[in-house]
Length: 116
Image (tube, rainbow, N blue to C red; front, top):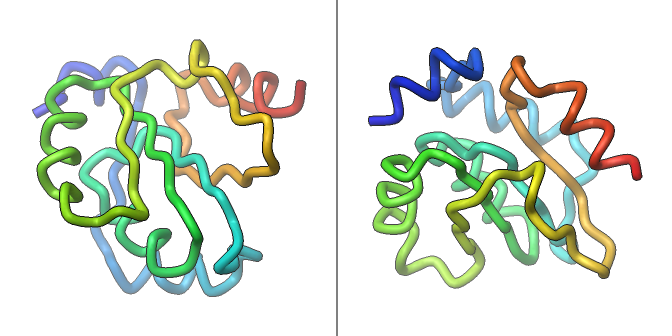
């Protein structure tokens, strides 16, 4: 599932839920936040983000991972999954935060888009 994109974009998926929880405890994410998650992969971070934020918009380029995530989170109204390329995705007009285990291959492009 999505292995060809994993190699192409140098993605690494976090597997430790405890590590994700510790990272999020250090973040400024709160119950009023709209979060964009770039490349949610298999959803380990997405699941924890939804426990802390108002809404999570997960943007996954890989069609196979998108279908997996859509099924996994179909009963969670706080999570919206989009099959799209973040670099072409229309950013919200309202305030938002970005949280991601950024794919190494496009880190510079993601940061540039996020700051403009």
